[in-house]
Length: 363
Ligand SMILES: *Cc1c(COP(=O)(O)O)cnc(C)c1O
Image 1 (tube, rainbow, N blue to C red):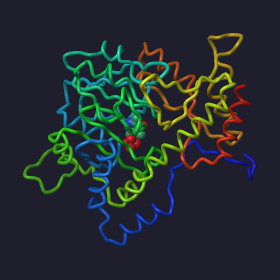
Image 2: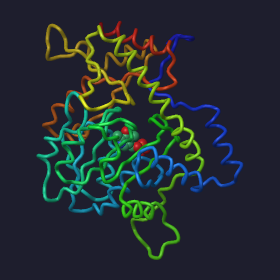
Image 3: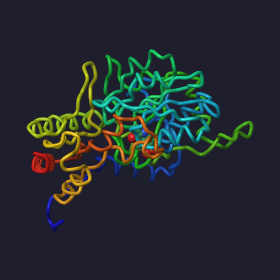
Image 4: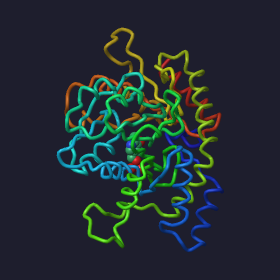
């Protein structure tokens, strides 16, 4: 890359003076571990989600683990989850000693395919982990009909709706991540929320190891600090403006990329999309519809050379790590889906440069 050329990173947190002030105040207060800011952040997130309680923890991964533990899931139990997702949900299931049952996604939404989930149900199924991928709610309405507890993974989606309900309000537990590049940033961090007081109590108890009436092997240090929570509080207050900006950028991309051969994001009727990611599909080659022209690797490298950092939306599908066959939609997504930079701090110039590079690479 030549010096001075515009470089558009794939992700960038939106942090400003407000966040600097908030963290500085915590440092001056002398109370930097889990304390009043964590409590306030929990209240603030529970209010935003419309849920009764929240437990802030060190990461989204830990939040998933707490939800599974609080449901009493362990050895001999099965948990259903989709293949086309980051490894965190699979790792959480394995960490509590349960068996992950991986199923395919719906090709157009990237959400877990309810029909495939239904086929994977057994007498041992104790929960379904439902990621809402890239900002779009999964098909909660159909997943709910199985009568199996749903753990909603909202790490990529907040504020979006399905059938008139906001994501996070349908499952027995809802998991958030506040990793640097997520919708809300605390550096690292996560939260698990629920409407069930017993669940909330169990999860809060499992987050700390000290000052307990008895030794419990599952107890651990899973806490968030007030330094992180102070950041989180500022970020939640800004969330509506973040989502408005994302939506405006997505509209611009949809307009600017409409004439390319790219498959643009689909939003099924009755759902809203908050565009954590703007995921496009590479077109098939004109002479051979079975192959891509050019392949994803090449497109990523060409765009990078132009200073536009795109990414695979999922590094590798779970069935690929596990060398399993029979996941055609996840397999296809891993070869054709491309995540385009989108975040609230993107400038108009960056949006235009990104769209231009895509139009030139994939006319
Ligand atoms: C980021 C993410 C997680 C894990 O969150 P961490 O805070 O990184 O542990 C889990 N599920 C999904 C869908 C994610 O995007």
